[in-house]
Length: 206
Image (tube, rainbow, N blue to C red; front, side, top):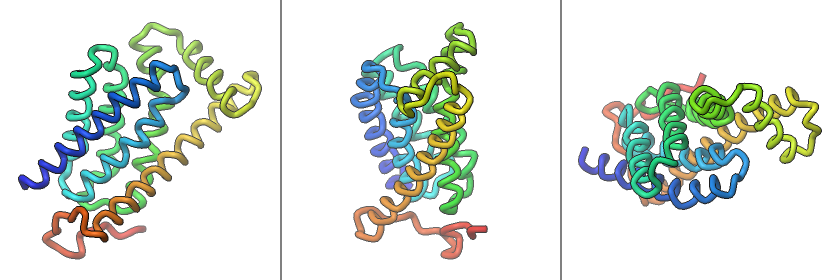
């Protein structure tokens, strides 16, 4: 158990440092969809934490550690990004609640948390920041039109394409992260906490 929490502390601290160094820079440069980019990295730490420890709720420990480090070094301006991390972590944990989730669950969780990053501005800038929902939507469409090379008049199409792209990126990020942590295990770099039942290492894929 001590080994598990030491591993989670290391993963949480590493995630927090990356969020502080890279995420803050991307936000300062106003890079579009920074939240999706950074959470794609965060998915690796969330999956590694669950995969190697098998502890339900391990995601919350990682999110708290990462958020604490980001607040410690960045301060109050990190509130909205950290809020996003906690909400996405809750969604992630709800999907993979099983102790040993299947590959499908990991992929679904990844897709869900990255899709949330597309809607996060409606909550922070709209509900909390006082923006009109239409203004938030227009900002998202404007960023999407530049990335996709589509005219802003195709706002709904742009939003749907962005939604599908976010879902795809999340599923790919989760699958790639799972493959990476499995490779770490196969090479003996990190070991998985044994399950009491060897057949419980993974849920059946339906």
